[in-house]
Image (tube, rainbow, N blue to C red; front, side, top):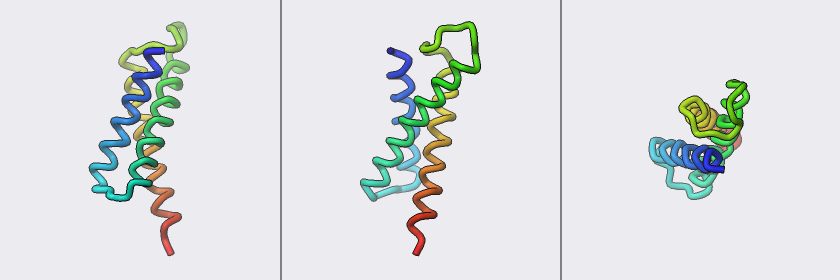
Length: 89
């Protein structure tokens, strides 16, 4: 359970940093960054557990944290690209 909270926290952190770096003022986009960060953190953290067999599934090791950050970053970038694509006239 603690590992899932860490993955969510790292996802929120990545989404928040992305919103700051983009100088985003739109609340809906900020929430989209945070949500995509959380989703990416969960997917990345769980994926890191799948790539390191033999260890407990839900743990807070450096590999899982790294995958959670990478997953959150990938989801935030994908959300930004999708928002830019669909907001064009």
